[in-house]
Structures are given as structure tokens and as C-alpha cells.
Image 1 (cartoon, rainbow, N blue to C red):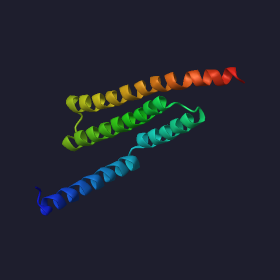
Image 2 (image 1 turned 30 degrees about the horizontal axis):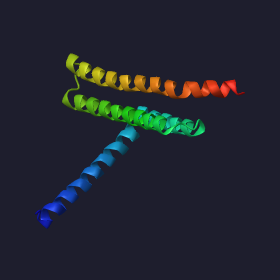
Image 3 (image 1 turned 45 degrees about the vertical axis):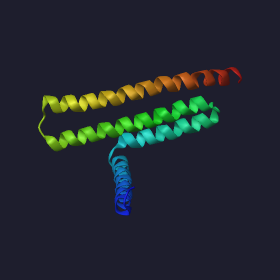
Length: 131
């Protein structure tokens, strides 16, 4: 059985971890214009989902796309910050780390674009045909 002290320490650390996560999120949104763009695009996707009355499964993919793209951008930002902290020099390994992180984000964005097309193009075609 856990002692009350251990439990309160765990709860305090969990609360601190959540606070740190939120601080990191707000800091990244403040400093990274690409995150602001992703937020706007995500909100537009949600609006489009309501307008086109997407199914539950389609909502699942929309939310997954938004979350993955946002997460990939946060990882990319973190990697860029760590590389910048490690060296201010232009170094082939620093460039490779930054470019690879950026490429990973690009792949998530590309996959999301494909999924958006799969979900919304048929709905747009039906809308145009009914006009």
C-alpha cells in the first residue's frame, strides 16, 4: 500500500508535468507562426466537417490529422530548439537533424492533405451536382 506522502508527491509531479506541458504548448504557439496557421486550418477543417455533416469515422480521421500535424510541428520545433542550443555553427549534422524533423512534419501534412481530399472531394462533387 502506498504511503500518503508518495501519493501526494506523485499528484504534485503529475500536476507540474501538466503545467509544464501547457506552458510549452502556449510558448510554441506564441513563437511559431506555423502553429498558428495549423490552428486556423484545423478550425477550418472542423467547420467544414460540420458543414458537410461528416460521419463519425470521418470525424475520427479529421481529429487524428489535426492532432498528428500539430504534434509533428511541436516535435520539429523541439528538435530545432535543441539543435540551436547545442550549436550556433552551421554544421552538416545540425542541418540533417533539422531537415529530417522538417521532412517528418511534411509527411504528416501530406498524408493529412490526402485524407482531407478523400473525405471532402466526394462531398464537394455531390454538392456541385445538386446545384
